[in-house]
Each structure stands twice: as structure tokens, then as C-alpha cells.
Image (cartoon, rainbow, N blue to C red; front, side):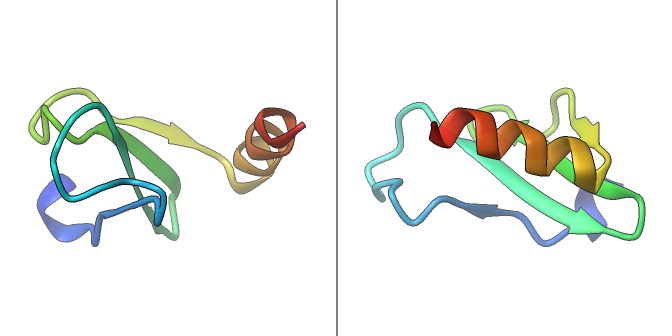
Length: 59
């Protein structure tokens, strides 16, 4: 699945590397992974769960 997704980083992420998460989306939900371990575990969230998480983080 990971190879078929189009992953992106936050516009706040620099190009120097470092700690960052990447996000992708498809019909199955919102997928989140560690940019340093692209073949590692992927967290998949329903769109409503993603909206709740990002809303909570932004407060």
C-alpha cells in the first residue's frame, strides 16, 4: 500500500531532514508514517478521526 500512496510533509518541514511525519490519503482513510522509516508502520485514521486529531493539536 505504501508504494501506491502519494506522501507529503507539512509545509513547516524543512528540507534538511530531521524528525517529521508524512501523510497520504486515499479511499481507505488518512495514513501517517515516520519520514525517517518509510517502510515502517503506518497509522491509518478515518477522516473524522483525523479531523478530530488535527483540531485538538491546533488548539
